[in-house]
Length: 108
Image (cartoon, rainbow, N blue to C red; front, side):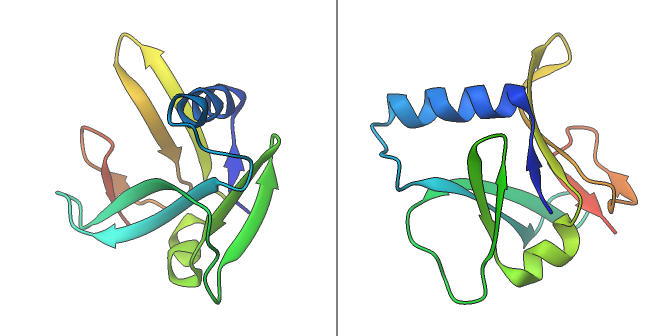
């Protein structure tokens, strides 16, 4: 399962409202090759499911990811922070064996 923290839910709702996205949109997360640790997270809004998508509901938000990405993201929490150490979405991924300093990429 992939979960969404309360802070991330609030930020997602604000962004979706600012962009004028309706209730048919959801959070799409995925893993792509790249970054200084080898794999990077990708976060988008989408309104079209694909064959093989894994679908979750957390904190009132629908999260979707492809099966390949789910193998890397199982158990991950999407969070949002605006603290002194940086502002933005964070992936708290228990499968990552190491991450880069900026938190944008990881390795398993």
